[in-house]
Length: 58
Image (cartoon, rainbow, N blue to C red; front, top):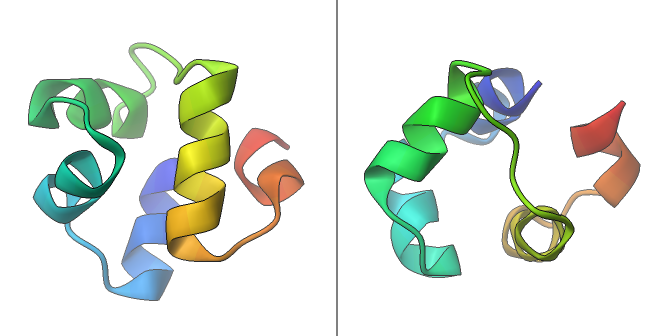
């Protein structure tokens, strides 16, 4: 889901990583669905990208 959101917003993984204070590897793993963000990071992503939290978690 995160991959589609980033693409639709025109956001690069590196930019998101810098904005929410995580490594690029973490974001890459989330995009590849190798791992999931913590609830805290989901909330940060939601705020930074200005999208509802449930759009990331559904």
